[in-house]
Amino acid sequence: MKAILVIVAVALLAWGAHRFLRFRQRKRAAATPLSEVQRRILHDNIPLYRRLPDDLKAKLERHVQVFLFDKRFHGLKGQTIDDEVRLTIAGTACILLLGRDDLEFADFTNVLVYPGTFVSEQKHHDGLVEQVGRQARLGESWKRGPMVLAWDASEHGARDVHDGHNVILHEFAHKLDEADGAMDGAPILEQKSHYVSWARTLQPEYDRLQEYAARDVETVMDHYGATNPAEFFAVLVETFYEKPMQLEKHHPELYAQMQRAFGVDPLAWWTAEREEHRVNREEKRS
Image (cartoon, rainbow, N blue to C red; front, side, top):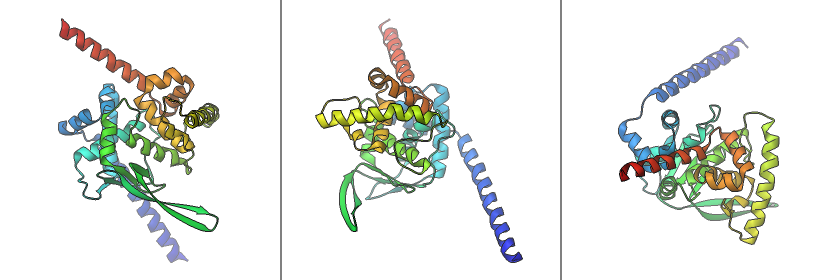
């Protein structure tokens, strides 16, 4: 019995030491500045990064360093993994973490990157009969498993900040959604009371999007969000960060819920960028 207790004690000590060492390493990674070359990649590939105020840019860079420490990138089907791939994916994904210190991408390590569209095997059960289908995809988030992305769609989605389509934001939104154990369209919110207003706001919006999608009525959000609550949330995340003005104008309560859930106001970033461009144009004229 004593031998078993000793083994357990040693295992617990080793586990604690590993966690402490990991914490120190992550803290050291966060404190390591990005190089100017790395910042240039973020600047060139991620317009959302360019919109951020200086304090959030610095915070994003710290998140990126921790992400690069935690995650392992693997190129498939000939895809090369370089700084551009790593930083574009990490920089875009970590925008979701800027407003709340309690959010993180946990329970997975590997990011698998294909050059383009990849084929995913989908299994469905009809009673005792298992049906296997194959589906072309641009991204896929495995529950408690790896993130899978098509690089061409990831790069295009990150660079085009106006179309409301960003596969990186979409798939990493799924990771935040599943953090509570269920991919159900509700991320972990700061307070339990927030779930009531979240459900009261999002459920009718989801129902309305399903109705409009069935009638092929154009909406701010992509109709893919009508697939199920999890996809509604992921598409909403894309829209919140890439079309904040349209979302706030047509769905103010929905925008307010997202603003509280993520602790940021992308519309303010967009407004500041527009004002900066206006001032620059006037200075050029003068």
